[in-house]
Image (cartoon, rainbow, N blue to C red; front, side, top):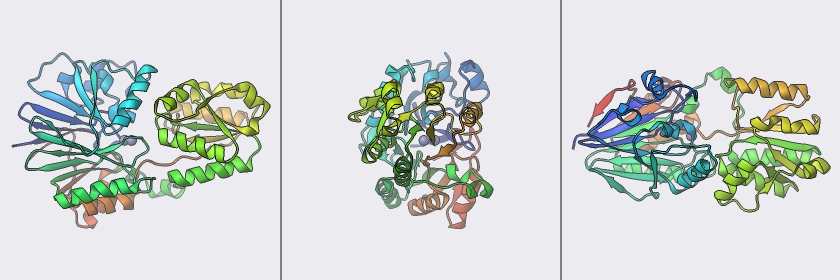
Length: 397
Ligand SMILES: [Zn+2]
Ligand SMILES: [Zn+2]
């Protein structure tokens, strides 16, 4: 066996990280996201400017002697957003929960990748692709069905952490796969470093919520206010949506969801999902929470500024998105404060260090971060062998 590990994208950005493992005619690619690709930009330009990974045979009519299989660790856009650009039928493996979500998003027209043949790989069930064995491990991230991915070539073991956190509801999942990797003395560990992206100044203002403390604060806000409460969460974070609905009920309120959210939640098995009923909400605003997507912001006009607005990692996510200023201006005009009540899907810096230290790979690569060198420095301090590849670089095993 001789495996070529090539780093194709996402080495110093948050997301869009793509690596390939190639041996003979077999090529495995994981993940398959893009960071930011305006809808009107032609595929050729996205390939030329490096937005898409340099795999021209997947995005053009260029032929290749390789059989490619794609693996998606979870269904965030920065890990699967390139699927829609595929020009040839390609197998795309993901967990059952990711596939279920993908299916409903496709039905709703939110996702459309005609050349992606979605296949399910169950957790902890090794599958062979050529001479490679691939195993998905369930992990904890703010996306249901998220996985860490192990690749073995018969001699070497490579692991892609996917996106991961340790202060979420399921640290035991992460500890489980980390224990297995530690035992195996793996060769290469690709570790995300999102939370290493920010400067100390940014961090000071940053109150870190967990999914659990977010629910506690949400319940408290519901108790403290007698107005309508409006929430802006992300439709792909099914577990949080379900938890919000449960918390609201415990505090005597019903969340009313828009059609899109309700369809997704029902498809993902959330029971008793209620859709928006404006008449009911206007008549008894203190009995309800309204989920509002930015696209329907003006639905809130009818409440005349009499509502509390909780931003929960929905769109627009932050100041870098021009729509955020629009949202802020709308709330200002209505004399409503924008309250942030979100939680990160990404591990704290000290948790990433502890995770990498525990796994203790022969080589650790830091990526999926604006400052992978900062994470690398922290890992070197605890004695780990860290490597920062350049875009397009290949490591031979
Ligand atoms: Zn990501
Ligand atoms: Zn993610």
